[in-house]
Each structure stands twice: as structure tokens, then as C-alpha cells.
Image (cartoon, rainbow, N blue to C red; front, side, top):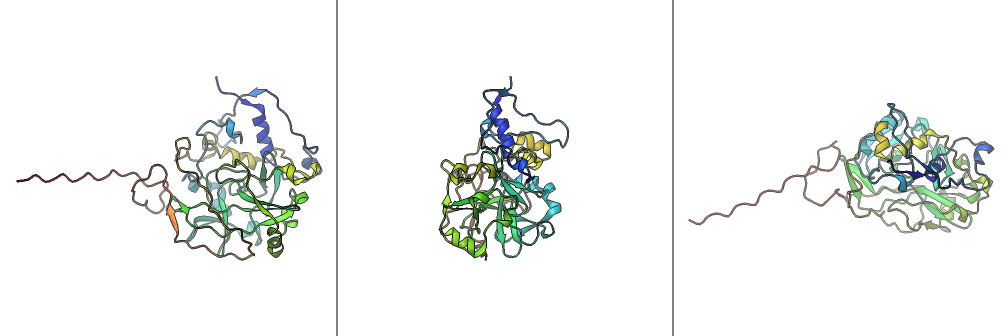
Amino acid sequence: MQPLVRASALFALVAACGSHSTSDADKAVLADGSRADAGSLDIPPPVAASAPGALPPASPDASSVPQGDSYDDKDPAALQDFHPALDAHGAWADDPTYGTVWTPSAAETGPDFVPYVSGGHWVYGDDYLWASDYEWGWAPFHYGRWVNLEARGWSWIPGREYAPAWVEWRTGDAYLGWAPAPPAFVWRGGVAVTVGFAPPPPPFVFCAHADLFAPQPGRVVLMGPRAVEIEARTRVYVAPGGREHFRPGPPIASLHIAPERVVRATGHESSCARALAFSHPSTAVHLGAHPPEIRRDLHREAPNEPAVRPEVSHGEGHQEAPHGNVHVQPHGPPEHSPAPPQGSHGPPPHMAAPRPEEPRKRK
């Protein structure tokens, strides 16, 4: 008999997917702040779609995902799985500091593109989820990290672990701020290389609590010198019990937003469902993704904590970090291996240790 999952997991999927519609009807799906209660009903778990290219359902509830049915963030599949979605909408490059990156086309985003501000809006389910308006937005806003490069602008570093949004949060009495989470690793020659320096802190944007769910955040957020001034009066929010490098947002009740101004998820965006389906190998392979090369249930690497950065304010400028201070973070037990050839995927192949020299016989 197949294991059963609670119907609340199905509601979590609906709560994690946002609609781009900005009508009052869409904004007030749960305008009174109530949460649907599925009770104790049990439903069969999602099954993979049988039709090629069909979108299989997926549950964002980690407790309902079979052990090992997920990707490690450093899985080399990240370098392959997103090409079909991104190739036609931007350009890939090998940056001397941040390795393999993808930069979206300015013809699509406009010259003032800022991740998690442009072309989308926030919705709320179990956490704050970025609902992107871009055709390709299901990928780089739920996987990987963004970095602002002086020569290329905002560019994306691939990663294979899903999150509602890879951002960091700052809270204050009147303002809430967020910024793209800094990278913890880069890609060189198909291998994940741990960042050995603290990347420059990304610029935070701020808005009044009541404006968090605005349909066009770019019209209400504060940036530049005004944001720097507000940042000094806010503090970094770190959720208790957060999972390693992912940082959930503050409890929505702490922001005291009127219920009618909270945009609840409706489940009408297929891009959100695709992002979730891509997070589990059991459903991702039916969408053309590669099976994981790193087994998370067997992976015993130490927790990958983000580099600690000092509490400093910053302006609109960006200074490149040195690229010499990086080191390879191998997967599995440490051993001496040659570097893989350029363009290869996955960790270096294991090589047998040389046999010890036999002692010479005395004459």
C-alpha cells in the first residue's frame, strides 16, 4: 500500500503558488486571514505524469517527500537542467570571480532590473514566495543565487535546491527589507567551489509593511541613499530553526498587515508548480531534468553556513570581490584527486592510490 499524506500537504501546494492577477477578488482569496483546514483526511501522494512533457504535481511539504527525493544545492545537474528554460532569454558566461553565470536579456527585463523587485510580486503561503511574471522566472528565483557584476549587471549562479525565494530579510518597526542571498559557492569546470571570501553585501530594498504585497514592488520600494538610511534602523532577521543557508521571512503576524492587504496564494500560476516539481527527482525527470548525481540521504558533508558579513551599510555601487581566495569543497570523503577537465560535470573521478614500493631484498 502506498504511504498516505495529509490533505494539508495539498493545501500547502496551493498556498505556495501565487497568481499574477491584481484584482481585489484574487487578493482576497483568504481576505479574513483564515486558513483552510483539511482536517484528518488522507489522500494518495502525487504520482508522476505519464504523458511526456506533462507537469506532474509536487508537494512543497518536506515531511511528505520520500527520503532522498530532493537535490543537493551543489548537484552538477544545476549546470544542465536550466538551459532549456534560460538559453533563449539571456547569455551564459564564465566570470573570473563567480564562475558560471547567466545574465538575463535587458531587452526582456529593462535596464533597471533588480531580482525580487522587477517583474513579479510577493504572495504568502507557508512563507513569502516570489511569483515571477517572466516566462523563465520559475527557475532563477527559486534556485541558485544572484550577484551584481560590474560588467554584466545582475547575474545568476546556478543551484539545484528549491526555496520559495533565495533572499535575506531585515526588519524594523515601520519597514521590511530584503535582498538576494549571497552565493555560498561558484562553479568552475563543472565543480562546485566554496566561496572563501565574504561576498559584498547586496543592496537591500525596503517598503512599509502594508506595501509588501504590492502588485508592482518597484513602484513602492525605497532604494539607494534612502534605503541605506533605513537599513541603519533595521536588523537582520534570522528565523529560529532555519535550515542551513535558507532563511525564511519573519512571521506575517509580526508585521501587523491588514488581512485584506495580504495576497494569499491561489494556485493559478503554473510556473510555481513547475518550480516545485523540479525540486524532486521523482517528478523533475519527467520534465527533462537529470537525476541527482549527489544522493542527499547519503551525503554527509558538514552544514554549509553562509559566510559571516559585518553589519555595514552600502550604497548603489558594487565592488568586485577577490577571486583568488576560493577552495574546492569536494563531495564525499576527502581524498586527493586531479581536477576535472574543463566543461566536465560532477566531482573528479576517484583514482586508486598508488601501490607502495616493495622493499629491496638484501644480497
